[in-house]
Length: 264
Image (cartoon, rainbow, N blue to C red; front, side, top):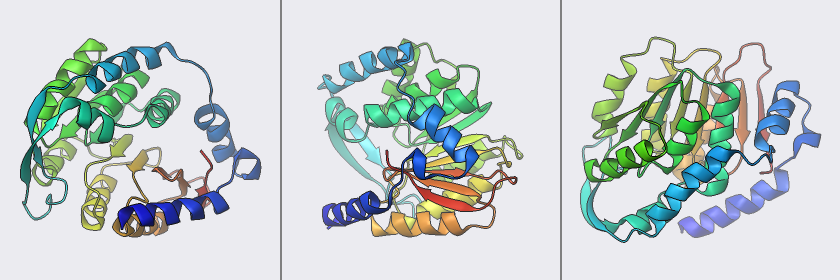
């Protein structure tokens, strides 16, 4: 069912998506030109992707704890998985990892949060984008996070602090360290409507007009689509960019409220 849903959503996306030449917002046009469609081969790409390849060829078996569908109710499950499988299925793609790197490199957020680090593939890309940032990565599974720490050390990103445990417990504690100075968050930890909206509402209390939120898998299910539509309609949200697999949210008060579907 989910596969059919994704196919239908992607066909709709292809019909309505625009490239930079169909955009009349100077802010969005510049973002597309200098970030989204930036074709430069940054050396950091190679550094991160060298470690990613090692993960994809690591067949070690570990026991994982899955809180993804039960964050708000306390449910969770255990299962054994190979590192290679996690890297290939739960890890972000090269294309989207590089985009996260460019977003961070361009905006240079001084405080960063990632919900759902998994093995640290997306974490490495973002951390390399701004090594000076105060960056907190959140992961539910302790066994997976041990690999995340090692991977971050290998790419010289020891500035990332990992917080381990169910997000329902750890997110309030992490956010308590911010007032309105959380400048960037990548949310990839719970693909339910309830979970996504809960995290959005919590995080929103700690951001400012220059903050950026990025949601992964916004069309993954009808629930995620519903959450994305509600986020777009929120009165504090000024600009949204629908890239199909990701949704980017801006709050800049000087901008007119607009929603864009961007071909990427």
